[in-house]
Amino acid sequence: DVKVTQSSRYLVKRTGEKVFLECVQDMDHENMFWYRQDPGLGLRLIYFSYDVKMKEKGDIPEGYSVSREKKERFSLILESASTNQTSMYLCASSDGQVIYGYTFGSGTRLTVV
Amino acid sequence: GQQVMQIPQYQHVQEGEDFTTYCNSSTTLSNIQWYKQRPGGHPVFLIQLVKSGEVKKQKRLTFQFGEAKKNSSLHITATQTTDVGTYFCAGRKMNRDDKIIFGKGTRLHILP
Image 1 (tube, each protein chain N blue to C red):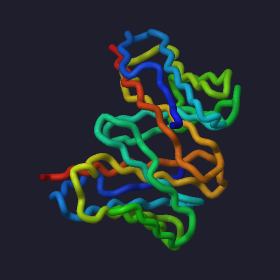
Image 2: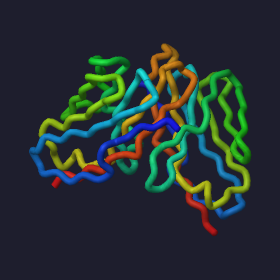
Image 3: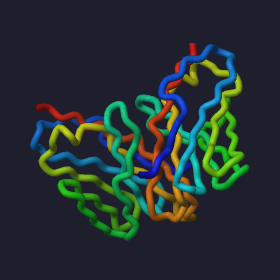
Image 4: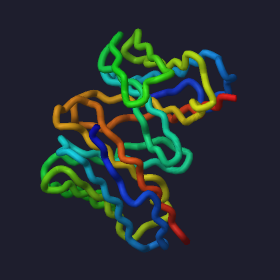
C-alpha cells in the first residue's frame, strides 16, 4: 500500500522557534506538496516541488521554506514560528501523470504557543 | 487568480436522504478530482473526471463533470452514517501542470 508519512502527528512549539516538518513518500513520486488546512479556509498550498532540489511557491509561502534533497523527502521549515502558523499541515505526493489523485499524509497538527 | 468555489459549506441530512455538493470554476479545467476527508482524517482521493459531460458512479456516489468543464457535482444517494465527512473538489488547470486548486469543501453531517 502506498504511503506518505509525516514525522509527527502533534507538535507544540514556542514562538520564534525554527520548526521542521518532515514528509516521506515510498511511491517514487516526482511531485510533492505542502498544504495547511484551517477551518473555513480549506486547503491552501504553501510550497510544491516537481523534482529534487526544485521548489515553487504556492499561494501562501510567506514565513515558510522547503527543502527537497532526495526524491522521497520533502521538508517544510518554519523559520521563526508564530502563533498564526498554528494549523494542520498536510503533505501530499503524486506521480504527475495527470491520471491519479494526490496521496496525502496523515497530517501534523502544529500548535505555536 | 483561478478559483474553485464549492457549495454548500455545510449540509445536514437525515440518514437515508440524498446529498449533493457543487463545484464551480472561474475558468475551464483540464480535469476535476474529488476527495473525502473523514473527521480527524486526511483527504483521500475518490475519483477523477476528464471528459466534458462525463458521469462516473461509485456505488451510491455519482460524479458529473459539466459540458463546459467548469463545474462538477457529487451526488450521494440514500446517505449512510459512513458518508460523514468533508468532500472536496479539486480542479486542474488547462496547462496540465500537476498543481490542483481545491474548493473549500462541503462538510456533510448525517442525522440518525
